[in-house]
Amino acid sequence: MTFRIQTVIAMIGKFAIIVFWHDSCYEKGKTIRQVMIIMTMEQITMQLIVNSGDARSKAMEAIGIAKNGEISKARKYLEEAKEYLAKAHQFQTDMIQEEADGNVEKITMLMAHAQDHLMNAITVIDLAREFVDLYEKISKHEGKSKVL
Image (cartoon, rainbow, N blue to C red; front, side):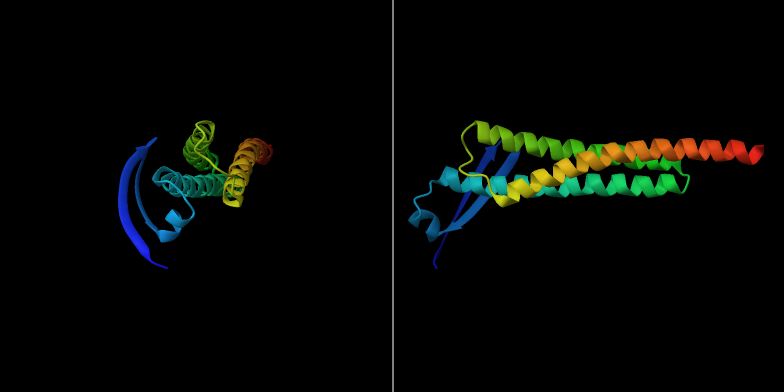
């Protein structure tokens, strides 16, 4: 396989893109724009996965921290989870916009996987908030019963 190295620098949304491709891109009849979109969508998809995973992890950590009675620290972790979720949501918005603009030829398994990560993160964060609230109530109740 021969590589036809060419650098294309363009802005699509907020992303600066540098693309290198090989002859097979030409053989398949893809245009430069199509190659750039494929590279961009993979990057966006990976960022969606990474930020969703980080959001979920912070939320799970918040539950464990709250279980140990450190409620204010748990709430800080929930705030961090919310920040990661906001980043992930922005990447999802970018993906949807690219699709709406007609720049997405197909939905890949990686994109579906990324959506699963995002939905899972949202669910875990919602539940983590409830757990932190419950652990706070338990902690306050235990404090009162120890005094009695």
